[in-house]
Amino acid sequence: MREPYDGTISEAFSAQTGHPPTGIWAAPGRVNLIGEHTDYNDGFVMPFALGQRVTMAAAPRADGSWSVTSVNEGATVTFAQADLTPGMDGWQAYVAGIVWALQEAGHSVSGADLVLSSDVPVGAGLSSSAALECATLAALADLSDLRIEPLRRAQLARRCENEFVGAPTGLMDQAASTLCQSGHALFFDCRALEYRQVPLKLAEAGRDILVLDTNTPHALVDSEYADRRRTCEEAAKLLGVRALRDIDDLTGALAQLPDAVMQRRVRHV
Image (cartoon, rainbow, N blue to C red; front, side, top):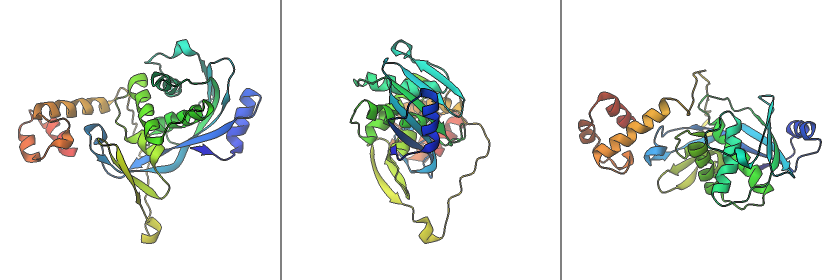
């Protein structure tokens, strides 16, 4: 999503590059109301966007490389075409991975200077990485004059995270960041890729949703997340179904599974 003028990030960009940005883009973090670990099981999810977001100022760069500065990290990284190798470490991998994913999809991506800031808590399970991916994709798509619809943007951002960064996520985080609308939750079918906006109407009901940071670290790369996904895939294979979504008889399915850990994870989904 392209943003109106933001003095803070615009000034940071000008200080870094010596000229103003072409534009400012942003993508939000998210909270999921229901449907945990269901996206990679072809199930249903219902996230909504947070006010916290990644904001990115950007402008074309003449030498064909990409320079990205994180205001939060106080660091600048520049990478060229030859550096776009899956497995890159660090926060910059999410930016480089978007360039890579766009190119893998056949798009020509212009070099760019990018400066970003974020108030999405990192490692809190609020999809800070997806927000970074989607903000980067929005900026680079506009700078390169690419016409990519929102759901396709989410799919490209997930490819970045899966294949370049190495986190085996489903599509929910990126879909939430590109598709959610203000005042609504997003009911998303992760198999059919169909969705609808669900009005929350919290004010009318006299209710609020509290989002609490428990300070429990959460990481999708090199964590139990990948192990849980493997367990679900193994269970589906044992049960002879495409995905856990396709189980009709839960009691009967659980009885066929070999251990308590697998049974608990299948029941949860």
